[in-house]
Length: 127
Image 1 (cartoon, rainbow, N blue to C red):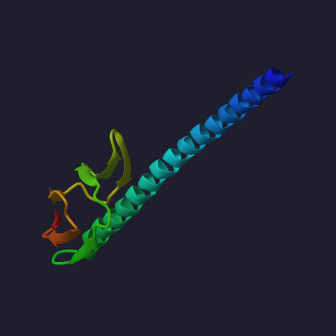
Image 2: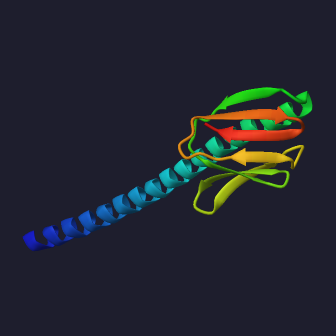
Image 3: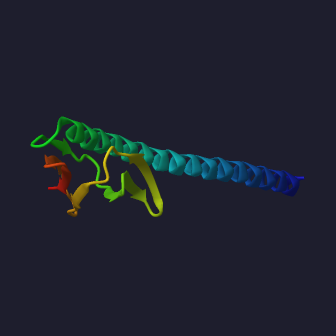
């Protein structure tokens, strides 16, 4: 009888451990999803700031300029009249801008972005 109680106890422990492992696995998956979505939100925030800056300087005309603080270290790209912000391997967010006449200078680990209108050419430089 004493051995039977021990076997039931072991089975109960195995079931509890299995349930605990399942809960931990699901929690880790949810945390990874939250982290991924957080990066996407940060990339969208940067994309909106830069797109609004480019469009505003384009509309303001020659000689206008602005500086944007780059709070997140994501890679920017301009393709024709689209701004792309790469935030994860193969993942990006994009926005259209009003002009494709953009001269972009990238710099690693830049903390600010300067946007200028130089005779209709929008100069975007990471500093």
